[in-house]
Image 1 (cartoon, rainbow, N blue to C red):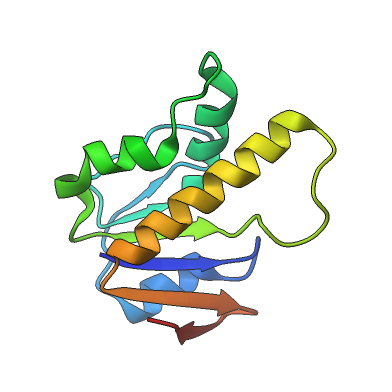
Image 2 (tube, rainbow, N blue to C red):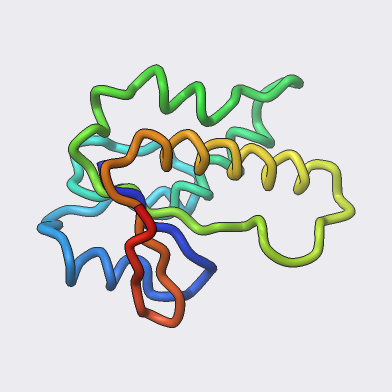
Length: 127
């Protein structure tokens, strides 16, 4: 699995399409669950946000959801936004989302064969 991350609107999907053999993309930005039939899963943070808000407390951990489906995404390109930068939100629900997204990124980065960070459309392999 290849993990690509970076800030919002930094060209992560374009970078992935230019550098990897991606024919189909599943966009989860609207909160839908990833369809692992696609070559790349984009906007994973949208799914994480929905997970953090819809579940009865305690929320269903997105990292656990991904772990349960590990075999399905082992050969995929996973693309997500790093929401950990900037001011910590005062809204407790947004903090839960931010922390859950960070825990998922940590787990995926540990599992990934490659990790790339994209900033201003320029990618750098960090693992």
